[in-house]
Length: 249
Image: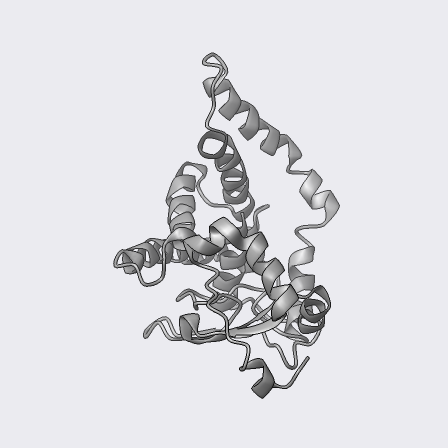
């Protein structure tokens, strides 16, 4: 790649959170690859935009230069680093917002619960959720595929995986969806984040409850009882695991 001073001579008016980008992203990226494959935008405090495959792979493999590490101060809401632009004022996600060697440790710890055999054991319940949702609408012959099927099935599956109450799935899913689509500068964004913070409080409550109970077959019980690197999982690490898994689910 060219040096930084040369790159700054290639500024672009680029905002991945804008409606313009959502409507035209293939053309925008194609244009950047042809004219300015590593560009600089002043949006959201300023950041680089890489569009060539080889550059992106090189960045992903060089965490010494391109760190994913995030810090979050829950009292002040201050965030440094991480993988989202603009920064999201919530705990970091593990393992994605860590660097090696910690990344390898966290990934190995989680992999035990996401191996093919462990995933296969959950197939019957996932099918049960899917069948139940289809049975609710089958007589009408109509379905809103996102709101009545594609959203609820992974949400319910994730709640079961975590060991959280199944009937609270909307209280988890809705704030997380709102956090993704609400612009950070919108006046309602603090209210959205407050809804997400409720999710983390719920995870903390359940985590400490699991510590006082015999082990169960769910992730919060796993975090409460299974040691990592020879020591107990901290509350902060537990929240970071939950952030990554629940948001993804």
